[in-house]
Every structure is written in C-alpha cells, then in structure tokens.
Amino acid sequence: MAAPLGGLSEAFTSFLFGRIETTRLPVRTSTGQAQAVYLPTAAPGLGDSGVIIGREVYSGKGYVYDPFQLYGQQLPAPHWLVLGESGNGKSALEKTYVLRQLRFRDRQVVVLDAQGEDGVGEWNLIAKALGITPIRLDPMSALSGGVKLNPLDPAITATGQLALLRTIIEVAMGRGLEERAGFALKAAHAHVVARVTTRQPVLADVIEALRSPNTDSIDSLGVSLDDIQTWGLDVALVLDRLVDGDLRGMFDGPTTEDIDLDAPLIVFDLSHIDRNSIAMPILMAIVGVWLEHTWIRPDRRKRIFLVEEAWHIINSPFVAQLFQRLLKFGRRLGLSFVAVVHHLSDVVDGAAAKEASAILKMASTRTIYMQKADEARATGRVLGLPRWAVEIIPTLSPGIAVWDVNGNVQVVKHIITEAERPLVFTDRAMTEEAIAERTRASQQLAEDPAA
View 1: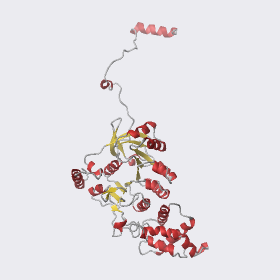
View 2: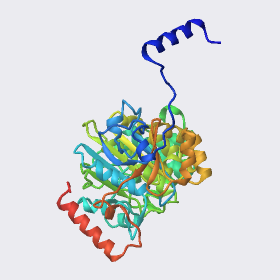
View 3: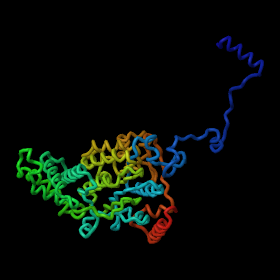
C-alpha cells in the first residue's frame, strides 16, 4: 500500500502537469547507430611526449612511451624488461625504439649485440646506416690488432678494478672466492697499482704478482710468501685464461684508444663469442663495469643500455651484483637499462634467483610477447600481471605485446614504418630484392638522418 503522502503528491502533480510516463518502449537499432549513444571508453594512456611505439589494440589510440619523460611521475625507475618467444617481434621493437630515440639530440645508446648472422652482429646494418663501426670483441681479431678492453684501465677506480677481477674469477670458477684467495688477489692488485705507473697496468702484471708475491701487504699479518702464493694459485690460473687461453687478446692489453664514447650509438658486437660458454657473462661483466666508469657521466645526456641475451647477466649472481650497482648508480644520471630475455624461467629458477628478483623489481616497464600458456602463467605470477593479460599472452600475434608500465597494462601493436622495415628485419633468407631495399634505406638514412 502506497504511503498517503506519496499518493497525494502524485495526484497533485498529475493535476498540474498531466500524467508523467516514465516507461519507455525498447528501440530496435543497429550497432553502428547505437555507438553514438553508448560512447566507447578507454583507459588513459601514458601521455603524448616521447617515442611512438604503435597503437593500443582495444582503443586504437597511439601508444607513446619514454622512460625519461615518465620517470619520477608514472615510473619509479626507467629500466625495462622485454620477454617473449623468438620470432614474435622483440628484435624489431628494440631496433625501432633505438632508431626513434636517436631522433632526440640528448640521447645516446649502447647495445650489447650477442646475436648475429653471416659473420656480423644483428645490429651491424643499423650501425652502418648511421655511419658507425661496431666494436667487435673477437679473440681471433684481437690477436691481430683488434679491439681490447682493459679491466685495469686507469679510468676505472681501484675499487672497481678489484670488484671486476673478483667477478671474472667467480664467474669462471662458478663459485664465490674464498677469503684467502681473495686476500691474495687484493694484495697482488694493490702491488700492481702501486708499482706500475708509467703505463696502463694489465692482467699479466696481476698474474705475475700472484705467482711471485711480495711482502708489501702481508708484513703485518704474520703469513709467509709461500702461503700467499698457494692461496693465489687458482686465481692466477683463472686469469691466465684471459691472457693465454681461449679469451686471449681481448682483455690482456691497454684499452683500444679509438673507441668513440661520444657517438650516438655504440654497438659491442659479441656475435663471435659462443653464447652458451662461460665467456659471455665474463664479457658482459667487463663491458658493463668499463662502461660504468668511462661512459656514464653527469652531463644531462639520457643514456640507454640495451642488452640482448640478458639472462647471462641476470642468471649469474656475481655479474648480477655488478649490474645492480650500475642500475642504482645510473638511474641518478639518466640511464635506462633494457634487458631482453626469452623466458623468465631461465632467470627466476637459476642460480641467481635473489639477484634476479632485485633486478626485476628495478624494471618498472615490462613488455611481454607471445609465450606458451605455462610460461605465461609463471611470468604472470612473478610480475604480478592481471589475469586477463596472462590469459591473452599465449594468443598474441607477432608484433603484439602486453605492456605493463608500473601497473598501466595495455595490449599494444608495434608499428614499423617502411623506412625502418629493411633495417630491422635481419633473417638469412633475404632475397636479392630485399638486400637491395636495405641498401637503399641505409643510403637514404646516411644522407638524410631526419628522413
């Protein structure tokens, strides 16, 4: 029964204005017409300042991303993790991203190119188009005057040199350095730094000091020279591999002088090194620390450090510790670290799970291309992705990826321009027409970088 006051109000209203009809008959219409009534909605993007990546799949909006523009507002850290199966577009994304970043005058990029074909690295064509010669680290060419990087380069602090030497030894041995061996190394390094002043110290000097120790650093400890020599024997044998073993020629002399650290793009070509050998993480450790002390400077330049096959870094506790420091230090000076990995399980289930977790937490941007269902679920758990994103990852087509930028999750289709296409696709099965197209694009880019 209606309330008396409500009924009275309704009667009075009907008397003044006539009966009010609130029920509407249904309207039959088409989807095309109804979309004007029910307007589409989409989550806010990342802004319009930065590098164009492509389009959001669901809204059709352009997708713009730049860690330097977002850092401090939407991003707590400018570092980026790229995941996915081979053949789904990771390489094309990396290359177009770098080419587009280099349009800004205050950008500089270093790439560790661990993949290659036809005797050159995968980034060789882009470097050539920009008029840049890759820094090819190759034991064979190093023996005949090739590029050398000196772990004892005076540009690296004494503390950095010792940390790098320890890392090289620990990676090669597959275990941490014992206290006595560590002391023998420290004593030998201190002796070399103090005595070799007229030239760059080199690894051979440290090996000699380990084999023939002196009394400079041990007088107050009450240990004999024979003890120090015994403690440092294994260390000397490991370092000897960089001087006379399979890695000789690359790190056993002064740093090559003509390395241009001011070039907009610096490519370290590691394609001649076996990706599955212990040499790769050793190389990455040396290059990373050398760059930390010679390349990163407080000059307001924005720098990008892109590492392919980055599991060599993240999966080694000793190398990961060095890169953790680099990432923390570089973040204050405008460094964005980009790690490209095929499978997250290669990292989180490895020997460096703790260190890997720390590095992954620093990566506020995650881009995930197609993965198998099991891998996608594991990735989702580790990265904290929403369920809907995990469910679509196995269904993604090449060139489409899930982007998680500090919790802003979108599905993005990467767009490659016709000018970029011949530079970013580097498969061996190229036709003669494709080779000619690449050559024309390289020449055009060299003649007109703004084209």
